Every structure is written in structure tokens, then in C-alpha cells.
Length: 107
Image (cartoon, rainbow, N blue to C red):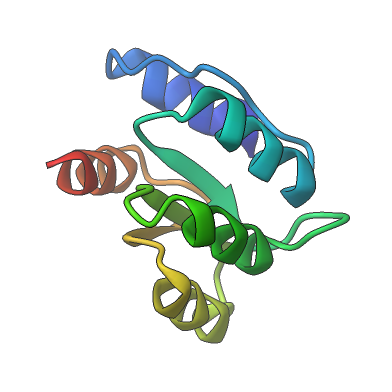
């Protein structure tokens, strides 16, 4: 998932500054790097994506986060938006949908 998303973003001239293997690492990386945008999978080890979004938004309410989910995880997507995610993209990724979401969130 990460490799595909990285490829799509880099081909659209976005810089990918880091990748996290789990939600806990995602929070730590956000705190140290403060990227312009985060793409976060709903399902991750150690700390799931929903909890990671809540944790990031607690200290950084202006954080821009796009959630990634598999088909059939609509309930999780609704929870993620409620937790502060700005948009979502569904796996398998459609390149045009990914770029559309990124451009919309970055404004």
C-alpha cells in the first residue's frame, strides 16, 4: 500500500518525507516532521489509524490527514472523518482519486 501511494504522490511532484509502519510511529513522526499532509491507513499495528488521528489532532488541530481504507470499511471512514481526517481514499488506489483528494485537502 505504502509503495503504491508513494509512487502516485511522487509522480505528481509531491515529496514523501517519511513512512510509518504503525500508528504509534506515525504520531511520533508527525510530531517531529510536521508534514503538510498525512495519509494514514485505518488498519495498522500497535495503534490503529483512528487512534493515531485523534492523537495527532489533539496536539495539532490543524493537521491535514487523509485516511486510507479498504472497501467495506465505510464505518471506519466515518469515524476517521469525525476524528479529524479531512478526506479518505479507498484501496486499491485510483491514481486520479488520490491526487484529487490530496489537492482538495491541501487547498
